[in-house]
Length: 221
Image 1: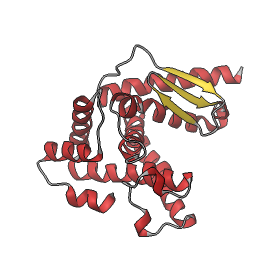
Image 2 (image 1 turned 30 degrees about the vertical axis):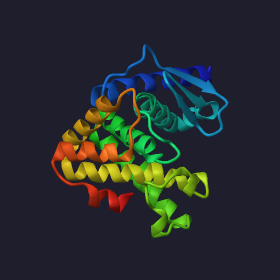
Image 3 (image 1 turned 90 degrees about the vertical axis):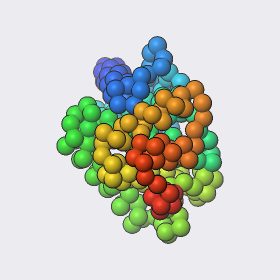
Image 4 (image 1 turned 180 degrees about the vertical axis):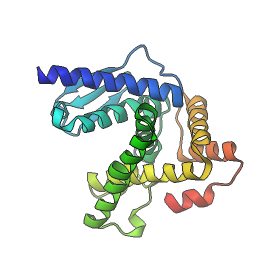
């Protein structure tokens, strides 16, 4: 049965995500992760120890999309379920960190060439296409906007998720992958079981590097 076979793939991607994020960011805190096929129109949704994945994604023709969404939702176990944040006021604090972590997963699991391909296609390519078709003025590009500032779901996704990933990759380019992973793991350990803000992300970067990141975040947020 096609759906059953793809269900096994979804479970495998979830397991691979737990391995990758546990190694790069910090240990997975729950006894198991359930990847559940459901009738959920927006693709995926996260809950502590469980992710819901829409049945339309269990199609061999779009297996790469199934993997991306399973991994993204699994990544929310770190940034949402363990480190909470205000998803209305500062949605980027969990969504951008999770989307950036999804990019890291592809490099960890398949090698940096695959990660680079993912970034160029799924992140940068998506953003450049959106710039052509959406009315994106400079004032609308701030990653740090609250969810209520966006007129529609597409604009929200492109700015908070996609441009948010671009922002964190730009930070990584300044300090290197090793230091960036240290920032993530320190931030994760410090705020586990609590709630963090964008200011806490900035502080983690400043503590790790010894540099002032105000100008960087002013530009992107």
